[in-house]
Image (cartoon, rainbow, N blue to C red; front, side, top):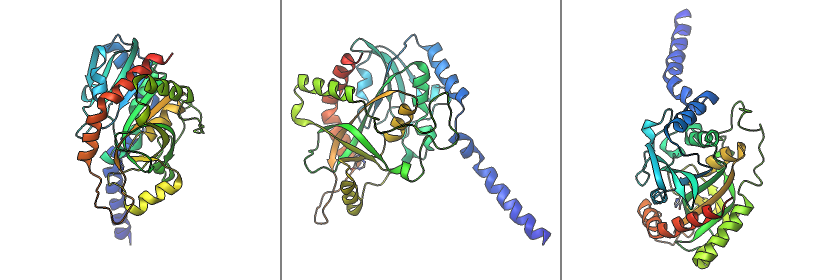
Length: 306
Ligand code: HPA
């Protein structure tokens, strides 16, 4: 009897021990965020107020910054590293439209295997550095039948599918120094920023391919089945992707104002008779084709932010 019990205990202990590195890395302390922010503040003279997260194939935005200082993610204390092709993996500080900005050239995705707290780690670091406004860009599949490939959708709201499944970066004890226990999400995407972005779009002549809609995040990495796509459309989503929402949740928790935009890189397949298939190459190609327009839009918008 004692031997059997010992064997069970040993097995549990071995499993528990094997999980320790993973467990340790799922949560960060306030001091760890602070250490990273202080390290960056000590290594750059830039004092950004605007943070920009570049989505798949949209990292060219960072190259538009002037007077740049950049840090590969692997050089930054506690920073995770990017593993997806199309994502460079650098934090770039510099000036855009006369404003001090910091660009994440490459972001972290849940489907890469990172715990959700790692995906969102940079957000609190940016907050502690003084960033007050966050611009997030992503590539997304179009669910709304009116949308065309190459459209730019301003995000007016989101559906947090991983959140429904218990994957929120705010799960666990709340860190009051960042924000409240139960943050409001009904105003996640700043109305003023959306209005300014629309003004930018009109000035740049983008009226015909700018839309507004609801973004739904799925964990990925699979693209959606036809049944799933139909369900998302029924739920009120206009576009679907694999990023953005965890970062937005954490940014709102610590009081940042958010502007989010999706580049519609492909039309989501809704019909069993369709021969179309979602693929990463199409996503990257559309991103490349529209990169300049999106960069122009963000540059113009940053100039309008006060
Ligand atoms: N589905 C999910 N994520 C995506 C898509 C898509 O169709 N396109 C780009 N990212």
